[in-house]
Image (cartoon, rainbow, N blue to C red; front, side, top):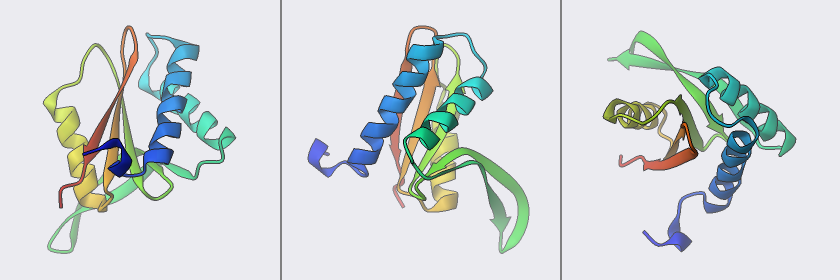
Length: 127
């Protein structure tokens, strides 16, 4: 996929900048909650519409089984899931894929605040 055809290219660019700004300010070693609080503050400052700890029900044949909580829904378009640690695991990517399937959103950003940098992975909904 070429850069010109990226889903939500402009909004993604701004979100990437906010993530890197949070990491530049805090650096490594904080809990996920700290990074999420800072992301929320900068999203507000940039007038980006978002919901934090967005609840989506998991159902089976219209019967509610449980809830899933997304770290962020941005502008009713993009799911952001934040992780902290040295690396990501397949289960982290699977989690975002599940969120995209449950919500019907097209794009998820999996953010890792690591020991040396912040990494952002774009995950597309293939349904």
